[in-house]
Image 1 (cartoon, helix red, strand yellow):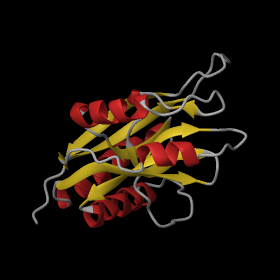
Image 2 (cartoon, helix red, strand yellow):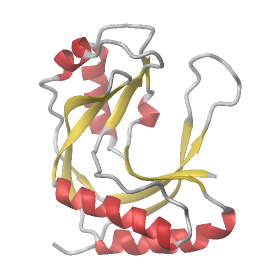
Image 3 (cartoon, helix red, strand yellow):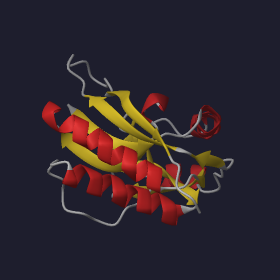
Image 4 (cartoon, rainbow, N blue to C red):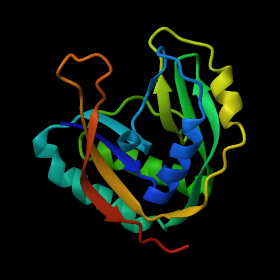
Length: 186
């Protein structure tokens, strides 16, 4: 199954982002992600074999147990090239990066072949374009976005079910298959 570790914003944060996104210009070339897809990926694992899952779950549980809950909020906007639009994060990003490193290490130690490690950029993807489009209107519209702070307190293991129908615009479906409370001490 195709998996990733994530922090999922609470419903209140999603509602704030939903309101901000409503004001964005419409462009059929930018395929917007659904609210169900709004999450901070910590470690993308790709296809994970079933026999690895028990060890992966145990290692992610340990990573969560070692990490304290931390304040977080959706904040600002950014992009990767001219194809991906995202909203960023503010708060205790050092702890979030540490949790991302721990999730990556947990997967590696469980035997999941991970991509080469690169600097973690916390973001929630809002839209993608296959052909690349000018993102300036979107960046300007969300430049002042500031969500309300919330406490990130759970490490989630999420399954990504890729589209299979062939219907244009179909989005992946996400299913949380494991969740562990952050329990570390400050």
